[in-house]
Length: 298
Picture 1 (spheres, one colour):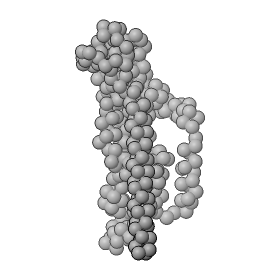
Picture 2 (spheres, rainbow, N blue to C red):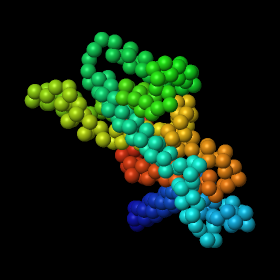
Picture 3 (tube, helix red, strand yellow):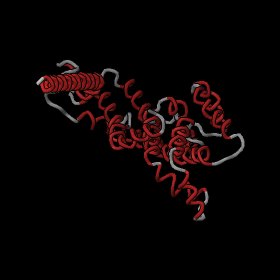
């Protein structure tokens, strides 16, 4: 009898402990989800205000608070911004898309080739060269801004897309090389050895084995590069003087100076500039997160 009573008490104690653990786990999850929702709402507030202003007419904007959702939403602001003869936003979008796409292609080609060399090839001074490459990440961009401008001015590249696109085909950036190198190191070398036994060279291994297996890391680099070039302001400001060559960020700055009190038009332009970035990120977010997690970026 005493043994049965002891077993019953032990079972009840175990059940109570399991209930408490379940309640604690549910409470922790609820707190975590609540914090995530709150943080998301805080970050979405500027986006909401921007959309609310962009969809209002000038009359309604003057009659309501800026954070109030429009009673009669209109897309006329977007049409006016696109068709404005003084500031051609359609041309700015085309110029920015060209620079972003060409630069992204160049970065993917060059950085993947350099990363493959650092990850797979053996040559004297490889580790020192890689350390030197990483050290350039600590150098602020403003330090090299003036000598780079002087260099491009001497060779006649100023006021063209060349300074914003051609350098992408020569290296691709230290961070991108580091990211891809770390990913390539995680790929088993047995695949390379099997390809060598079949008579494959470095180009075949690089193009047919390493690159297809590195799609996640390549997508990460591509998304980061595209967003950087799409939102770049300083580069176009330095090198592009012709209004017909200006990009989105320069167009927004120009539009802001011409329409200083037309907030509904300025916000409409900002929304059009932001939408492609949002689409690109949501399309590639699965590969983006996977690439960061598998390259040590986590």
